[in-house]
Image 1 (cartoon, rainbow, N blue to C red):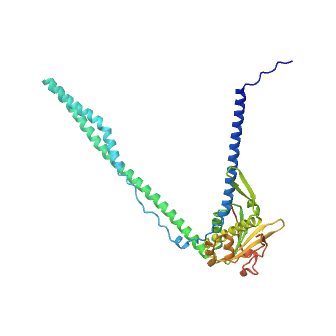
Image 2: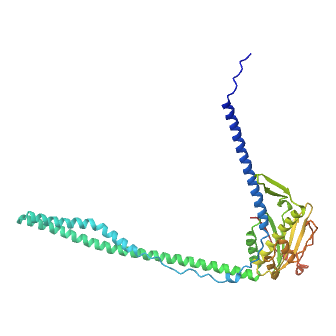
Image 3: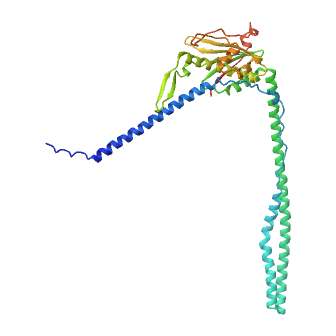
Length: 370
């Protein structure tokens, strides 16, 4: 028979159980962190959907934008310090040569005093004269160098200031051209020029912030737009509420069908009003807007919200408690049952378009997502 293995010591068993407990602890912490992130993500999604219902209508003040912005005045840079810097540099260049020649004269005088004699006097006189002449011409060269350096610095200052004037004139001309272009575009927009309207619509609609992808088709004629907004499906609405328990676990609960449908209704109404209010706020030539909220179904595209919004009534959305109340205040056309499921309705068309040929309409398609 094979020899029996000695039983594991108590210390070994303690270490093994401790490691297992530590592993269980870290796994538990990881699970709690996953639950926390899942809860936070769910809350953020709900908040993003709810934020769409924060409605406001603030018309753009184009009259203020017609005022020409004056270009800044020319202020030349003060380069006067360059002259002083150039003179100081020139003086420094001749400091050592002048000091050497001055020291030589003093030295010759000292030697003459100490070793005075007729011969020494003649020698020192000759050397001193040479040193004095050299010192004189060195000082003269220094003065000419200082004068030249000052003139060059003054020319440099004049050159730099002239460059500033040239750059200023170029910048001023560019600014004036941009102002002319900007004001011309605003005047076109105010007059209802189709190209200016289309360009502005494309710009402002792309700036709308929505948590879902929304396509917008706009047809307009005689300053009346028909806006078709392709609304998101119900799948974008969470079907369950998420709650974090005191234990750290999360708990899901199915939403009541009426609550779920109302949330989708609110989102659709909010998106439609966000688009319409943005259009009326930024296109002053539009005095009213026809809009349709369309959902894609399996076999067809159905209009579930139809609305005509005169400019004088769009401000009502600022006082509405939510988007559903806002569309009701604007006499929107919609049908729903008691559980707030939306049903198809007829689109509202501008009566001015009756018998209008399709090619006369100006069209634009924009995809919104931010």
